[in-house]
Structure formats: structure tokens, C-alpha cells
Amino acid sequence: MKEPSDALTIQDKLVSDIYQRAQSVAVECVRKTATVGPDIDSRLDNVLTSKIFGFPIMIVLLGAVLWITVAGANYPSQVLAAALFWVEARLTELFQWLGAPAWIHGALVLGGYRTLAWVVAVMLPPMAIFFPCFTLLEDLGYLARVSFNLDWFFRKSGAHGKQALTMAMGLGCNAAGVMACRIIDSPRERLIAIITNTFAVCNGRFPTLITLASFMAIGLARPGLCPAVSSLVVVAMVLLGIMATFAVSWVLSKTLLCGVPSSFILELPSYRRPQVSNILVRSLRDRTMLVLRRAVVVAAPAGVVVWILGNVSIHGCSVIGHTARFLTPVATAMGLDGLILTAFILGLPANEIVLPILAMGYLSRGSLVDVGDSAFLAGTLTANGWTWFTALNTMLFSVLHFPCSTTILTIARETRSLKWTLLSVIIPLSVAVGACSALTLAARWAGMVR
Image (tube, helix red, strand yellow):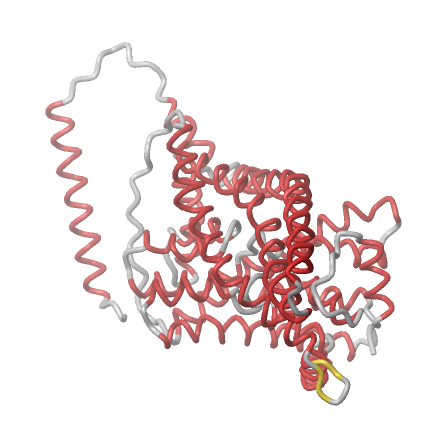
């Protein structure tokens, strides 16, 4: 993995010679007329890649994509959930008509199908919005400018400038972000991008962050300010994930994946009119459906397992309850409780089911619980000892913890290495445990919490 510094020098010199030769040929062969019009590409680049306007425009555009994704996905998700749960009711009637045992109905319908429906309803609309928006920016030629703007930060972190693109892709789905790491030529920098992509907050974690940010805002702000405060908290969590990407990339580049950053040779493409058919095919077929298919394959069996663990009792307590008790000492040191850690572990197939599992455990139900009623969920959390600090630590753990099983499967296929796949789980988990423990220790030392 280690790249010798002389190889970098030779590469830079070769590229420099090629460009100098190309420039000399162009000067000799190309004749420009006196009536050359304004170069629109250069004018746009002077603004979009400038040190003054480049970053604000980039943050606004990417923020707009996220806002469109989060806001636009709510109604389609509700409609899709209603349709899928209508099917669940018909399946229940079918099982009753067939006289199927209750445990078969519970495992297959209330476990496997309900989890599958939940994942599809929550994942499909955001991905169907985010990926076309993202591909539109890519087709316009703007994403190359984003990569150019962030190259300095990633280079200082020992990573590659193209990691900006894979990180942005991870905001839609980490599995897609990991696949996008193929654009990075250097194996060392590709591994850094793969391992740290989980810190990009994917759309599967946004429902949890938005719900808990709203719960946290209720305890900290006036009612009229709650929406603004909760929005700022979610934005802060996204920025925290980006900062974690830089920090962990820097640590990896100095330890396990040390080496010299490769040159970022990028010829900025011309701005062009987007091709709608191309955008739809690439975003829906090559990205959305591919990721959704992998999630579905994992979610249904996981739903069966969660139902079994929630309904099999040992000495009057479910397996989930025993697991929560076992994890309580570690969770307490992190400012959480045992059931929160259990929900994240059982939510490995899809981050979308963490809150339903949590509500299922608190309410002692045998299947996933609908958490669409925020007031009901807030009352349930408060009754189980939650405070604003519990919500903060849960959000922190959600941003920094291990990737979902779909992403882990994608990492295994991309790296073809058990070692790097395991490290892709262990490293983020260590960061999450360390961050939550340090924050809790500091808050207790300052007397903010008990």
C-alpha cells in the first residue's frame, strides 16, 4: 500500500511535461479569431471554485439537495407505508383463513414482512429523490468542482480529493458511496475512503436524527423555536460526520494506511445541458434499485430474527430484554441505556428500524411499533428516563457507529478482504464508543448530568 515518494514525483513530472507539450502544440496550431465571445465555463469556474464563493455555494447546493430529499420524501413515504401495511393486513387475513399457527404468522408477517415494508417505505422515496438530484449535479459538471474545492482538506488528511464525491454519495446511501470509491485509483486512498464513508450520514439515519432532534429541542427551546433548533441540530450532526471523516482519514493515513497522497489530476469537464434519460437510468437503475435490492435481501430475514428475539422468553424476560440488561453497564458509561445499544445492534440490517425496535422494547411489544406519532414517541422515551442528553448521545452514536449490513456486504465485495471489512466495522464503532463516553464523562464532571 505504501507508495514511494519518487513515484509521485515521476507522475507529476510526466503530467507536467504532457500538458506543456499540449500547450505548445495548441499555440502552434490553433488560431483564434478576434471576435471570440465570452468563455462561460471560465466565468462560472471563477465563481464556483473561488475561495470566497466556492464553499458557500457548495454548502447551499448540497444543503438544498438534502432538504429536497428529506422534505420531499415524507409524503411518498407515508403513502408507500400505508399501501405496504394494507398488504400486511391482507396477509394476516390470508394466514388466518389458512389456519396457520400464530408463530408462523408472527415470524413471517409481523417479523419478516413488516421489517421489509418498513425498510422499503423509508428508503425508497429518499433514494428516488436524492440520487437523481445528485446525478443531475454530476451531469451538469458541478461535482468535479466540488471535488476540486475539497481537495485541499482531503490532501491535508492524507486522503484523495475524489473522496469528496464518494462522501457526498454516502449522504444518500453509504453502500452507494462505497461503490463510488472505485473512481479513486490509489488502493491506499480507496481504502481510506471506504472505511470512512460510514461517517457520511445516510438517508436511513435522517429519520432517527430528525425525530431525536425534535425531542431534544422540546426540552431546550421555546415551542416557537423548536423547528429551527432541531434543524440546526441535524445540520450540526451532518457536519460532525464530515469532521470525523477528516480526522479518521488523517489517523489512517498516518498509521494503518500510511503513504504519500497521490496527485489529484482532474481536468474539469465543460458545463453541459443535463440529459434527462441518462440521469434517470443512472440514478434509478444503477444506484437506487441496486442498493434497495441489497437492503431487501438482508432486511426480511433480519425481521424474522428480531421477532423471534422479541417473543422468545427466558425466565419471564425476552431475549431482547436479557441482551439490554447485559449491555446496560457499558451503555450507562456512554450516557445511554442497554436497550438503545440493543436497538442499534438489531438495527444492523437497516438504520431505519432502530427507533421502532426501541419503541418495541420500551412498550414490551412482540413486533415493531409505528413511531410516526412523535408525541407518543416522546412520551414513551420520557417515561423510560430519557433526557435531552440521552437524545444527544443517541444521535452522536447514530452518526459515528458501524455501517449497516448492506454497506458491510458492499465493503466485503469491494475490498475482497475480511481484514478491511472487519476494520470498517471496528474503527467507526470505536470512535462512537469513545466519543459518547468522553462526552458523558465531561458532562458528569461539569455537573450537567448525573
